[in-house]
Length: 183
Figure 1 (cartoon, rainbow, N blue to C red):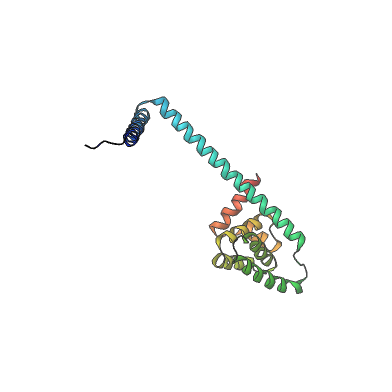
Figure 2: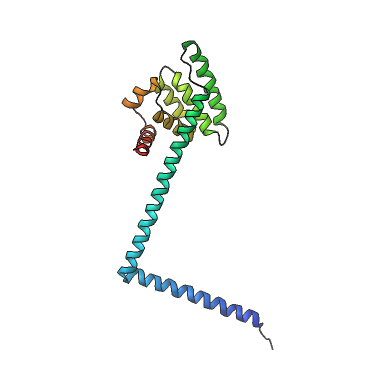
């Protein structure tokens, strides 16, 4: 005659009780959800609170990103200012585009690459054309940083472009995002 192991029997009973308890709770929860107005009200309240917390976290993240970009741009321009001499502008443009392309290939260097592209944009005579090229050729994260930098500190040759004819959705979203955070 075979005798069953008391440990296995106890484990089976414990598992059955746990499964029965979980099923009972699921049935109770479903019943409360369907029939109790107070329970539904509490669930809606929790969902609203969760959505509010997520919105606050998203807003805080935007503020931190804008602050980070502002500080980085200020430090970068203080360290390496944009030349005002027309003879240096072409060399500055070429150097910054090359450095930006090199940095854009490296992970974690998006902000540095964006600052190089931004500096190249400030000395380029047709910034709208260059922004179109950037949009098609560089990664989206770097492009968004460039647009934020333009929104934070519009260069003289870009200011009229940003105020007047903001063409793409990403540009207008980034400018709106920066303006919403500042308010």
